[in-house]
Image (cartoon, rainbow over all chains, first blue to last red; front, side, top):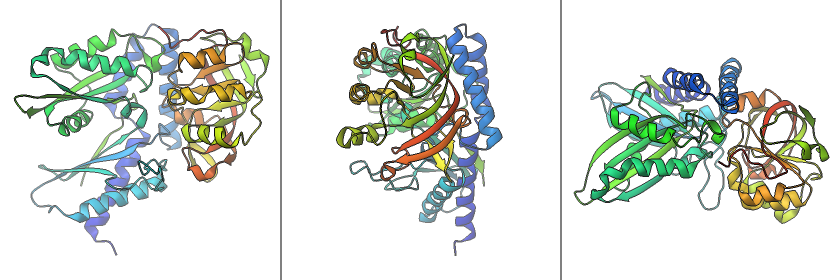
Length: 272
Length: 164
């Protein structure tokens, strides 16, 4: 018999996945709407119309927005009164297994070499669970699709190349082209170590895209000059937003990671 | 313009940018299905057939969500499909110059909006499955389309909307 705590966490994860998969956050819908309004290409406008019609149908039929329901990345914050425990990991994985059946999700988790599919979106180290201290007990899920994840990159830049960070980000987006389902959200992690820069880039995708600071806006403008447009068919908006997270790094290093997110920028946070 | 599979010479008159409503049977095929077909031959008649680069969500014999996957992953696996008679591809993101050349004079690539899985599923009926052992995403699902809204991304004359 699972403990009430286990049940609470598993249910919260399952519910957060359901909501993330079937309805986009308000800030993402606003950004897509703005992109549609300023678009002048008829083909690109048609792509946005399909996107809005798709969002309407997904909500109405209570089905996933995209068939690539992703791998499930989970962020948990723990206040001082909730103990850190192995049970948290087990409960979160149980939430993923339940959501695979109830939403339903496409089983995407496979062994990297044999390609054997576990059938329940869980496996060694999967779901990806990140636990940190916080003021409140929260669970945030980020279902991450492969089309955009496959186009992500990390570069160990030189400290003397600080001025070229924006160029690197643009080059990653240019190379990705039509493949990550633009218009995209671009998460950038600057600093940390070889492994933590991509983690920062992914955390940047959790930030609201209602606003950008000057640095983020300047990279975003530069990306939008590329003209890749919705689905790579040409258009004014290639990136809906660029979000940056920074971490301290070694004086001899400058790791920069770019985590690309498709227009279907799914995330849901629940408080327990 | 309305088209129904299996496709014939009518695809040769299509131009990049044309909007098409496609009906009839299509077959989903991703990386693993292409590899299996190359190894064992087609589990369906490829003549005039349309392949959909898609790994759907299927539940209780119904298509729940079925948007396109990134076609470029199949770049190197596509020419033998066209050689066997396949004359339509549906996917997202476009394909390589090699595929554009292979389509010349015999087939087209249709673009469908990536991520629009619920919209796609709303025009689909599940008919059958091949290679079920490959798992839900990689199996070949035989699907009946009813007016799926597509754009011709690459035509049979070498025009390519993705190339700028």
